[in-house]
Length: 306
Ligand SMILES: C[S@@+](CC[C@H](N)C(=O)[O-])C[C@H]1O[C@@H](n2cnc3c(N)ncnc32)[C@H](O)[C@@H]1O
Image (cartoon, rainbow, N blue to C red; front, side, top):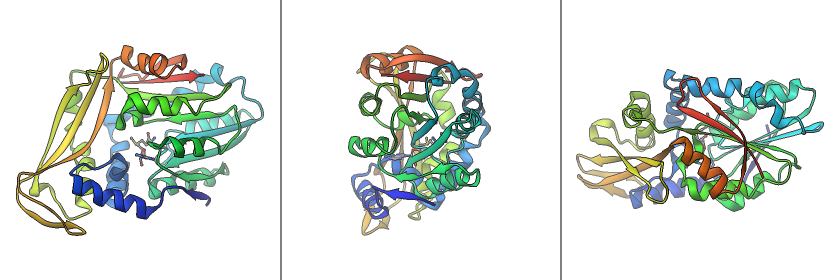
């Protein structure tokens, strides 16, 4: 298995400790410990995300016209690939069309990256994993330079919404060259968004990084709050935080959390369709070639070009 390491485990461990000290855990820490990886895999397979999985399963047929100009080589770079399962239908389609497929899953999680690489290698796909920080413009450029254009970039699972989308979409767009395509999805905002975020599988996922340092559900309360991002109409941010209900004297490398303290537990953006289009076209300067909605209307994928 080939995995190039740009972001090391010790750097992530340090970010995790610093995150606990700052009472604010970065997104990558939610996919790092064995507990987090288990919780994420269970969540990704939960019926809550049936619509999203179906969307990626039906994309190959829908996006065919946007990929017709690809020649014999078909490099695919997937940012925040996870276990790679959502990428798979497009990979199978590209290979099935007789092209030479090269797959570059990019992720901070060693365990998820290994799953993505192992599954692709089992299917005899040419695969090189890249362990990198996709919130870093330098790492993004490094990963996107792994292949020649035209190439296909993927970003699935509302991954954009785990970062500041106004910044992240610009970093992503700067990786695209003439002929490249980016397919990314986003979760549309609904009246039930906050209720959905309280689903038991999502709560287990949200608490898993703390479970890795011995903090359990009974030690405090997980709270959710939603706010409008005033920078543009139609951007909603759902924040989670954990409030300690007793003193937690030694959670990691001498970090103590006192009763009543709050730890910010990452956030997720959801959008109106108009705000999603604005992000891609106005904010990032991309052309939207196609938009495809999931059958439940909750997710939307866009095919973009420079
Ligand atoms: C919402 S999950 C989506 C996974 C996959 N694309 C899917 O849809 O099943 C976000 C993915 O981004 C990865 N990730 C989060 N923060 C990251 C970072 N800063 N750098 C690289 N990967 C990151 C996580 O490990 C995880 O695999």
